[in-house]
Image (cartoon, rainbow, N blue to C red; front, side):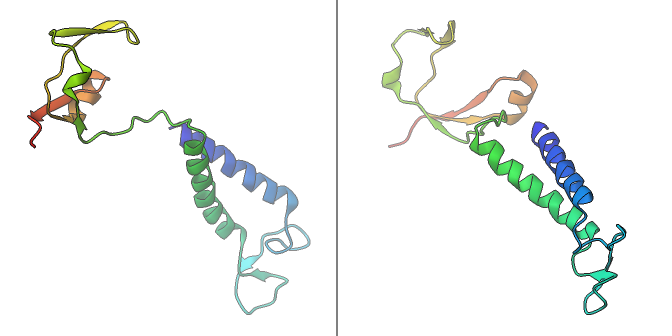
Length: 137
């Protein structure tokens, strides 16, 4: 959602700049919008009118924000994990192990493959996985 708000702000700034500058390619000398037209008088017609600029600028501003937003690592959207293969040697033989980084007891996972349960994850707010079975050799 934040990505849309930022791209909307970038869009509005771009449109405001064009409206203040009023380039002669889109506007007449007295400040009115030129109509769309190719092969006609360039005093009243243009192949790139203001409405076409607005449409293209909306797409371009979203694409710019989309790539810059992800490049800066600001994305808060969770990355989906389809399969997780867990290595048994990472865990001790007890039923529970203590992870000092999260300060909670976590249940030991069986060796095998797990898949993200999207519905349960949405409802619980934390990732929930479904055990698919033993790792095959």
